[in-house]
Amino acid sequence: MTVGFFGRMVWLGSAMTSVMVSAMPVLAASETIKFAPHRAVYDVSLGRAAPGSGVNEMTGRLVYELRGGGCEDYAQTMRFVTQSSSSDGSQQINDMRTSSSEEISGQRLTFTSTQYHDDKIGEVTEGKAGRRDGSGEVAIEVNKPERKALSLPGTTYFPIQHSLAMLQAAMAGKVRFAADVYDGSEKGDKVSTTMTIIGKGRVADASVLPASVANVDRLKQMRFWPISTGYFEKGKALDKKDALPNYEMAANFFENGVSTRLVMDYGDFSLKGELKELTFLEEPKCGK
Image (tube, rainbow, N blue to C red; front, side, top):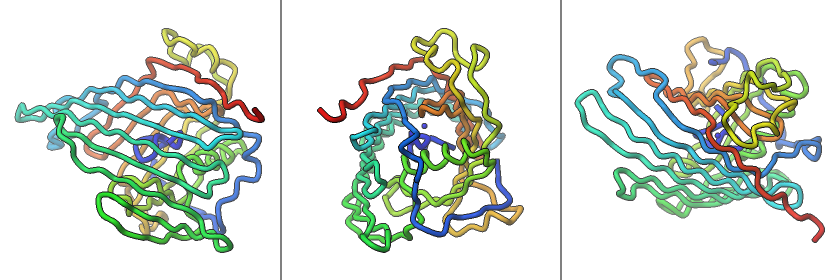
């Protein structure tokens, strides 16, 4: 889903407490974590729909691709297509396409996203973000849908950076990880406060892997953690019992960056994503 739960669609429990980092995000052990370049395809179906949600049925497909790592910048692309029908019988096709490039150091991020509704182009978002020398403060330049300049605290994480830090927290045995995340989604001017609840890690076996998917054997004997990430409006206090996320993402998150058993919860309805195809891509040829 970013990895990073595919930016805002992916990595994704309400949380009662949070301990926010107080300095620029630093991944001291990130060199020991290696995400595998891969392409994952998920079949999407409606998990549940509350009365009054307006959603009668929804199906779709999500394709996520991660490249780079090691000596190359990370590059993520995602296409998420859904066909939905409402209670009044009307139907709609939504097609969201995103791509981003993120320096391994977490210093710079470029992003673009385009939304289509019934084959008609909707909103386009495009821009870049970088950390200022010294302070680490994040300076953002949004080019589309309209030009604007923003500034965020140095504690803000970019998507891959957030996924790496989340995995480090899991490996350290932590059960909660809180962070502000910026990925350039929507109009490029929004930062989310996130709280991730991390379940007990275990080594994968056939019981948790889709048997019919090619290459899934590479996930056997690999550690994974059940995670659930809530995305909150920036500034909303997470220590209040009535603090509800805008949406939540849950998945089994493997130490090589692959995710299985996705759940995307938007409040009045939720979607499930089952892994149907998994292709491991060529590793960067470092030093050549």
